[in-house]
Image 1 (cartoon, rainbow, N blue to C red):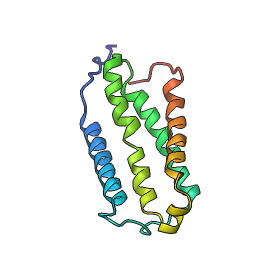
Image 2: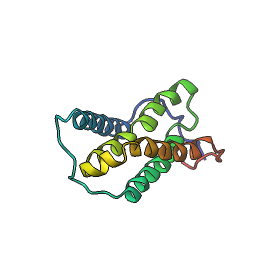
Image 3: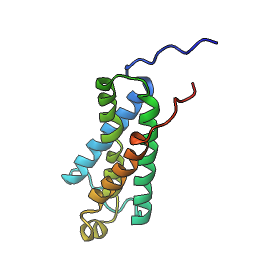
Image 4: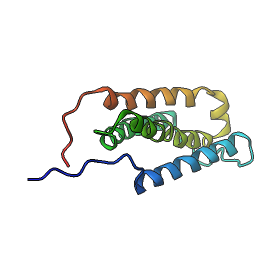
Amino acid sequence: MTSPPPRSGEVTRGDAVLLGLFLACWALSLLSFTRIVWLAGSLPLTLYGYYSVAVVLGWGFGILYVRRTWGLPTPVRRRFLLIYYLGPPAILGVLRSMAPWPDQSAAPFVPLYAFGVFSVLFLVPVTMRFPRPLG
């Protein structure tokens, strides 16, 4: 039984797709923040649903980061950390900018709290010790 070839630190097609999605979401968040694009009211998402998305993104991308960077050297892992940790909050930013304007103005710190929820749940799989993944 032969072992699989060592994983390279190159950005794969899936990583490039995720990076493009995250950059597009950051651009849309910036355009919405500067009122060039008006997204308010297009998705009346409750706070419970919004924080649930933050939980899912944090946990999912934490696991994805661990699986993707398993066995890679530290400098390469740091590069991927930029994609997998700073990218998904862009989705949260777009979702929050789509909330109705009275909801946004009534609770202005919700995106910051959601980033905290995302960060905690991202760090859970990153800081835990797991056995070597199969395949």
